[in-house]
Length: 92
Image (cartoon, rainbow, N blue to C red; front, side, top):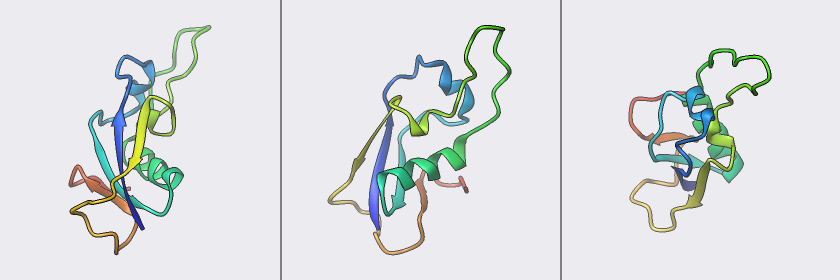
């Protein structure tokens, strides 16, 4: 597995209303897509319905509102199950 760092890139996006966390996330996963799905599973919340004519907020972890990169020399072990490693205490 690889270690990914997901970094919020646009905290002004309305999509952050659909996430209960807005900081850097460290995820162990096989692919970037899998890392984003893990983060989304941990932090997504239902957002209030928008006013008529506006789009619904969606959890931003799968979008360009979040930058994602592999951490090559991580202190986190690559062996183990996929999941969010930091922040600690969140489960998907």
